[in-house]
Length: 83
Image (cartoon, rainbow, N blue to C red; front, side, top):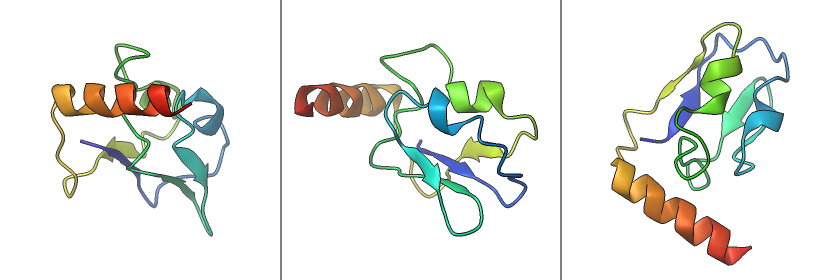
């Protein structure tokens, strides 16, 4: 699954630099995650780094975008080959 940032976000700025894929950016009111770039850190880390650093636990899986670890790894491979 891709991740989402909920309305509990306090705009603390700690998640954005932790994302190895550049999937996190500032939205109109809170940070947002681009699901086409989010691999839940598969290929980079064993755990999503944004979740690890979020002080208010406002990052969770997006139930609207279900992806297996294999799909996330394929997305990771596509992203690094596009660079």
